[in-house]
Image (cartoon, rainbow, N blue to C red; front, side, top):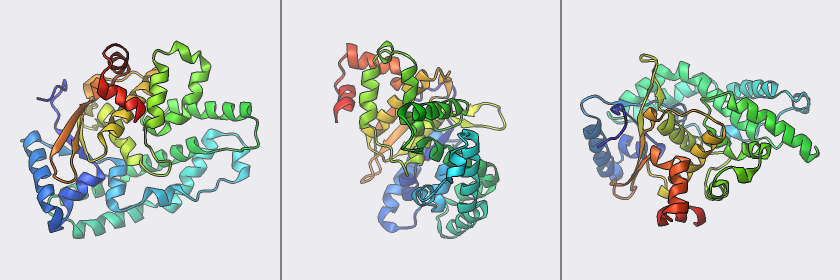
Length: 321
């Protein structure tokens, strides 16, 4: 039974799961059919598949790594020390490297070679692309801005000031995938005594084990963001609760939730728990669901209780391996 305060009608399939349900390849058709039937039964009679910016990009066949790498920012732009100016430069660069018409062309081509199950998702992706495209460009631009090494010849104190400027800018953008920026938000801890933050050492230990590649994995961060915040809905002014399906490692998913929710708390961001969804872990060999994760179980207070008081083996395992 779904425990969300509002009935979940919306779901999101990550790239691996979508590959199984959308392919015409007979070898994986059996697994894809099993997943399709389960999803259809769970959200019957009313269901809606979320079209997310980077899910759209990945399904179109655009490789994030090729876009994110090999971007050089002129020294004249960096020396201005204007975060907004650097971000504007990056936006212009990404628009040039990844024009909307190129994504549209790839989606149209994908439509020709996909099965009947995938075509409604692709048609909706094509229809929503003009609204989603600015979100893709903004996410890519902030991603590169926060991960810049800046000038290595600057004193540590000067680089810390720049990093804090970026943090302030990121905090003002509530729709950013915070998980993508967590390691760059660490300067926030220098504003106060880190020991004053309950259990901070546990969260940082889990963060060290968390896997998020610098030039990839934006789609993975998008999944975590959506399971926590839902999907914005133009019609109702409210977000839709979204259940997510993935074949990623269970420990990786748990660590991502723990770290992301910890930083939301660190940023004093007021989360609305009525939009918390669930994540279903799918076995890529069989198509069976092997686990179910409820976002509310990974709020910092609950994680600390399992670590410090209950000494829960599964949670302690996340600290070490």
